[in-house]
Length: 113
Image 1 (cartoon, rainbow, N blue to C red):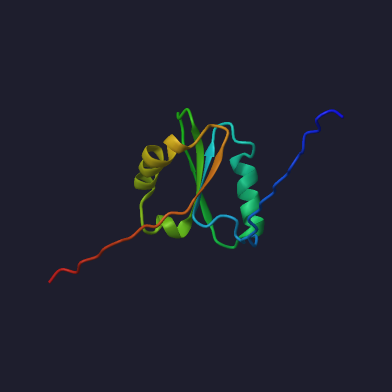
Image 2 (cartoon, rainbow, N blue to C red):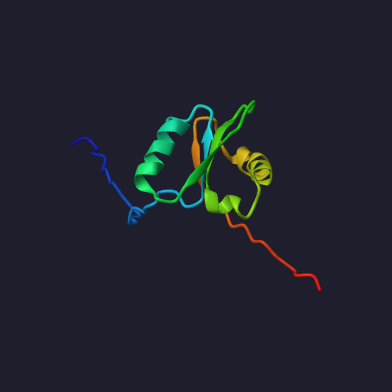
């Protein structure tokens, strides 16, 4: 009788409740992402009441757009956010990807006398 190989299959899954909204703070879209910024913005408008701002990144070889919750931009200005994304997030992103980013912005205020 020929030697029969045994096949074993192991499946593991981590199951979580689908979160609405599907994005908490920010999405960074690559230039070749399977979904474009316009389609993503329309989907967000249907799913989320929270307003998101669109920031277009011009002349970048990897990133095309950032969609960020307006509340984040009340704590950090656009230029600082763009610099953060280009310096810290861009190295982690391929042009065909969309990254979901949760961002914590802490503001420390000291009142003068």
